[in-house]
Image (cartoon, rainbow, N blue to C red; front, side, top):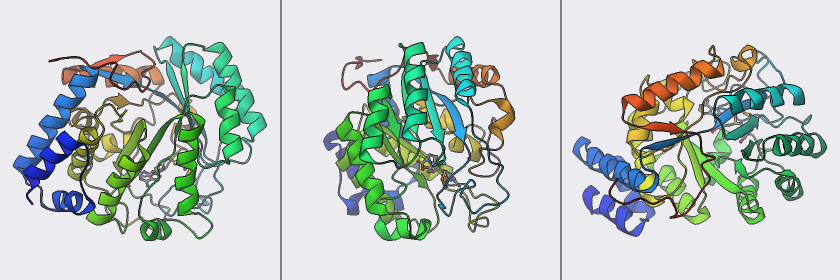
Length: 355
Ligand code: SAM
Ligand code: FES
């Protein structure tokens, strides 16, 4: 077994074994990383051209009933500033975003009991009615099957729910007892069954993570077959017990982005804000390693800093218009172009030859 053989196997068969993934992650050299990067970039170019999709992120609530040990807005963090947006504020963000060219709105928040099915279906159906040409993505954590279904029927199209780690022991270290590894996974299969374009994902470099648990994440991605995958480095938050842990590595995150691109050539793969936080050029590097989505922030500027998942999060002071201008320039600087399509998951259709 050597790294080049494994990279070629992932490229041609779109899979590898747990042992092979772990071996690759452990042993890949700088030269092999560059080979992997080139293959991933070429694959993304073949499917999407030099186009990068944008999603307008609206952080609707910093209130959460969960206590994920790594997360800055976990319920036991007394220093966290709690806010929730009103329906009117959310619609105002959409209006602003629509004017700036966004055709996907991502409503994300903690698991906030205020956003019951009744409240949330009202918000989703209003956005659906006012913006029939836009995709609505939800990222509101775990809800029951019926709740997911109601929101889908109200007009939501996509749901982001990172699995966080595909290793049960690892999951149980990162989360308190009340949270269930099985329920998280089950939720993802439900979302797929209901018909959402579904996004799984995980942090890179979270405490207790190993190359073996990362290999399990890759196996899980293959098994679930999600339309989207959000991965970004873990970054410590000063008010959590992991405050003194190091951030996840930029290099390892980029390697994983490239592997995932080869595993699933048409997957929607964001270059995340966390990647832009660990390195000033992180998002550009993400795109050059096979990512094809960026998610500028559309949240009201006065609440940005309060959705504080980790320390030093970028773009907390900017207006949405500035964010999009900045990202557009960044993408141009590497030969890519931001596009205003809805950017739905679209197997094969978008494939272009010899881009
Ligand atoms: N409550 C929803 C959920 O649980 O899916 C959505 C919000 S949650 C804050 C979004 C994601 O932020 C999580 O899935 C997690 O991977 C990521 N996140 C939380 N804390 C983080 C940290 N310290 N560093 C990097 N990412 C973090
Ligand atoms: Fe709920 Fe982080 S603990 S969003």
